[in-house]
Length: 389
Image 1 (cartoon, rainbow, N blue to C red):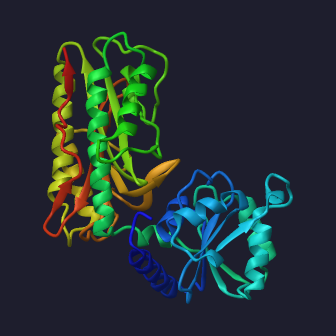
Image 2 (image 1 turned 45 degrees about the horizontal axis):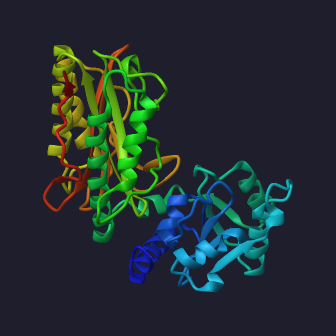
């Protein structure tokens, strides 16, 4: 286990308190990140039905997984054997049979079928079929959206979690330095990403890396005006910029960062735009402290953009921590005007300053921790446009 048993117990108590406040007696969490948070379970099994189940009075959650994955649950979780419930292989891809048919049976056997049940209605991998099985199989239950309850429980990190993110950040730095080294004219994007991925997995002598919940993003040339583009077989071109967004990962915790590389002669417009971008990013960082709100951060950020007449419609950040594909965001706070979430120590977020102008763009981002007095950056690497003449 990555954490002491006591930490998992404190997480459970926090979730149960939130359940009580929301009138939820039984919580079914399908979110891969939340399953990890509640139980410690960690395997690439999220492509099929699995969940963590929390009863409001239970001493432990239940980990509900495929029989083939039971061994992983015994190894990775802190749970007693009786709290690892498995379903048989004949539920796999044999529609209309579904693993949640067995889940419904378990809930009925435990006489939980008339409780108020919270579901993660917008979680990745929680399919319409999952919902229909619960809805039709438990007609006497009071089913409601848990409204990302466990996601919000994850918002404020423990010091042990912070330490894992600091390790992930060191790996992020190594990955970005490798990107600066291998992005050159005539080099194929896929070859560069291969080297970057190698660095991210090799990590440091003290701790190796893991797969990230998002692929290394590598928009280049005109692609820098778009978002979330990945590497192709095309070669890097002299005079073009490339945005690199990546994250080191340590024990499933992420510390993402983005930087921009320019090949060839310095481009005054791009350099000046990057300076303005960094100024906006820094303005948001400067007001990141306990007692301020996410809105305060957003207002400071956009105030700088407004000063320079730069338009940006997308959010500029989100909370981070545990990550599984397809996302390293926690789906809670958004760095955007109007989000009144109060900042507390050990809230962590990825603040992204990406500026796009039709056929070109620049970006820098930081993984940030709220401290007792202000903000701490997880990574230590210049945000300036990296020019390779």
